Image (tube, rainbow, N blue to C red):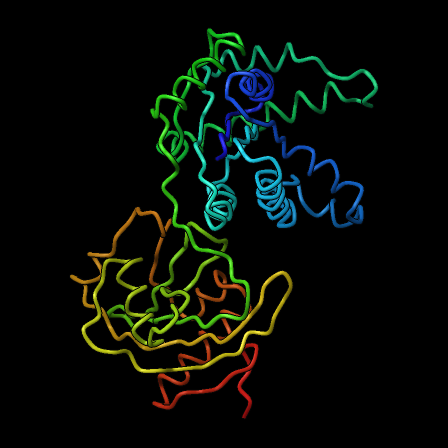
Length: 346
């Protein structure tokens, strides 16, 4: 299990976490800041300058997941993780990756008033050996108050268990968290558990269209990037039926007819991914009443939208977009296509 302590810079996450591991039996402190610091020595400086925050590095997010899983496999018990997460897609990617490893997360939000946050930032101790450290670190913290406000207004308070520690010491805050966790007051994060593949996979996606012939794209909570409704085919399951099942699970829409195959695309392995066969089916056109029944929010989807082919190019990763582009051509021609890495073989 993981107890993830979220909050703005200056909320007191790290000091609270240090006290919390003394209160939760068999618990260990894991600070993902350590991974960010290590990446400054591992990655080329030019690569680091291309991002404003190490959280924007996909390698950081993957290493946080992998390191947490490795620590729990080695030590067992509970990990206490003090880390600010203000972007919902990063939270979903990390928590979804942990869920895929069957690791539950209890999400705590330290939420003192903004005036107290600013006071704490102003009084924060800065290591004297950092060049211009005091100015840079304080300004960094102040700059993140606005993104913190935006997260509070959109998703953070609904997702995490809030603890107002404005008038509490770190130890008092830790006691309150330990009581809430131990008493079952803090729920386990509701996020889909999709095990990571251990070999090549067969996956089925279904294209659904609105009355303007725009295609439905969904934004899953358990992985980064936009996608088509669909998922991995279970052992012994017919691929088209798997697509129908996934459409129902993700959107609430039940397809009456078996969808028509549009493309078969072989996705080459790209470590640490395994690749495999990706099928796209034509699920047909939804009328306005059916489109209004799309389920959100839910444990699997963060968002959905109908888009044109041109709009899809700005949302989908390149290989996925090529898959869509050729699927639309196959739909127009009435004949399925075979692709390898998004490119037709003939």
